[in-house]
Amino acid sequence: MLEREAAKYPFLRDAAKLVDALNLQLDDLADPQYAKVLDRAAERVVQAIEDGAVDDSLDDYMTELLSFPVAVMFTSVKGEPFMSRRYALAEAVRVYFLLQDEERQKLAQMARDDFDWDLRDSGETYDSVLYDFSLYFYDYLRSSSSFHEDKWKLVNRIVKSGYVLLTQREVARLIQGEVETLIKEQVSKPIKITLPEPFQLRLDRVSKVFEENRKRLGGEDLPSDVINEAFPPCIRYCMEGLLAGRRASHMERFALTSFLVTVGMPLDSLVDLYTSVSDFDPAMTQYQVEHIAGVRGNRTKYTPPLCDTLRTHGICRNKDDICERIKHPLTYYRAKARRLAYQKPQPPPQPSNTPALSQ
Ligand code: SF4
Image (cartoon, rainbow, N blue to C red; front, side, top):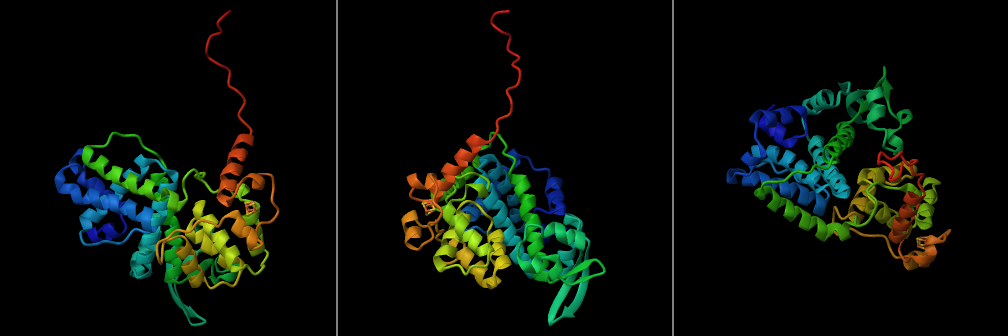
């Protein structure tokens, strides 16, 4: 594999082999000659935290390649699930943009070699749309299982002899999902090691940025996984309205989107949610969701409005006992998540190995 390719897609097997072949140890990378690698690794994680996307800096291929496993290590050592999810998504978003302009051959090779897809060249045109590829329906169903938008449903696809026709952009989107899952697996195993000082200094900087942004990102004190059962009644009302096809007001969409972004729902799932249940324009929906998530525009990540505001807009519905003692939907979410965790059946106590005091 060429260094340039490995730098663009450092999570691929061949890229990892290239890194392994260098046989670099932590202490080697602590040498000042690798300072650029550590700086870029810290920058990758910082960009994920601040911008929600890692840029594709390709000035120095080897620095770019080596900085990926170091960034993964920083994220794993930090062990913050919210940060890990954000980092995996930010790297996957970078790949999505790269793949849209990638040579078809490269895209196909990645899909086949690294994700074991049965992907073929197609080049067929239907209704003026050029379908560059066709993917075996089983791989298609597996890789699109988390997409809710109507256009991804198999019944809405053109299928020929068991193969689903796809544009290059659609294949890029499916691969984005695979990359996010792959990186999430790598960073979601917290590791405990003592880092050499040059690493620790960069990780301290990353931690500082994370702490500074934690509140803005809304990850503070929130459960690490999205818990649908803990959604407050107002958010359920917005969501059920959307699913039922009711025309959502601007405030409903803002409240729902800002809430789901804050509790950690991936942006693509959110876009898929909107576009699967309505005739929203996918590009416009993506733009609006990214704007509220702080990925675009003024880079401000919005949190949901106060209960008072939602009440004024007629969105505060079906209040329950928790609503009586909170002023913000996120406070409801935290309280309900704690209650659910408390109510979860506990495993029966195991027999103690400690000898009894009197026998
Ligand atoms: S009180 Fe607040 S959390 Fe409860 S339904 Fe109304 S707006 Fe939502």
